[in-house]
Length: 279
Ligand code: GLN
Image 1: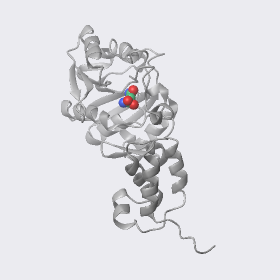
Image 2 (image 1 turned 90 degrees about the vertical axis):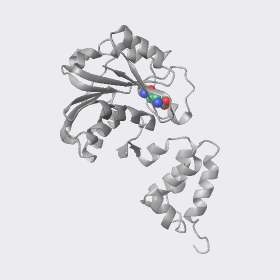
Image 3 (image 1 turned 30 degrees about the horizontal axis):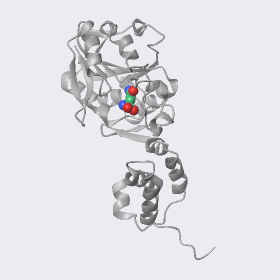
Image 4 (image 1 turned 180 degrees about the vertical axis):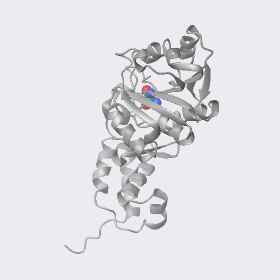
C-alpha cells in the first residue's frame, strides 16, 4: 500500500470529539482520554508531545465502544478516585468524585489508629482511599458481588494496601449484619440509592451493575435495612458515614433520628448534600 497516510493524532481527536458530541457532554475529554490510553502516555504528555504522531491502531475500535455509550472508565479499565488509580470494568460501579466527600469527612473526624468497615465496597475506592491516607488503620470491605471483590482486592495489591485490607462476600439484604461478628471505629457505606424508575443516562443504566444502583421505589431500601442495625457494628465513639442521593438528606436524616442518631449532612463539590454522618 502506498499513498494513504494514517490520520494524525490531532485530526483523529477532532473527528472523534465531533462524533462523541451526539452522545456525550464531555466529548473532547473522552476522545483525549481514549487516545492517551491507546498511546500509553498521560493525557498531558500526549497533548504536549504526540499531536503530530500517527493515530494508533485500536483508537477507532474504542471510539465505537464509546459511541455505543460504554463509559470511558470501562474502555480504559481504570478510574481515578481521590488521586489514586482504580481498576474498574463491567460488574463494578465506577467510583464518582461526588463520593470523595465521604473520604474527606472520615479523615477529618477520626484519629490515627483504628479499624474501618466499607459496606458495599465495589472497587474498594472508599476503603482504599481512606487507608492510603491513614497508615495506622486496617479495614474490611464487603460486597454481595464476587466480581466487585476481585477488583477490590486487585486494587488493594496495586495500591500497596493488601496487608491492611480484607475482602468479604456479604449481602445485607439476605444476611443479618450481626454475622459480620466484629465492630469498627469507622463505617463507610455507599449503598445503592437510585429510585427504581429513575431516568439514568444510558452510560450508567446499560453498563453499570444494577445491584449497585437501585434501591426500591424511593431509593431508600438499603438505608432502611442498615441504619436501624448499624450501631451493632460501631465501637464506642465510632463514626458511620453513608453516601446519599442529592434529594435524600431529609428522608435519611429522619430515619437516623428515629434510631437515636443526631445526623450531620456534608455536601459534595457541587454543593449538594452527599453524606450523612452518624455518631
Ligand atoms: N451516584 C450514583 C449515580 O447517580 C449512584 C450510586 C449509588 O446508587 N450508590 O449514578
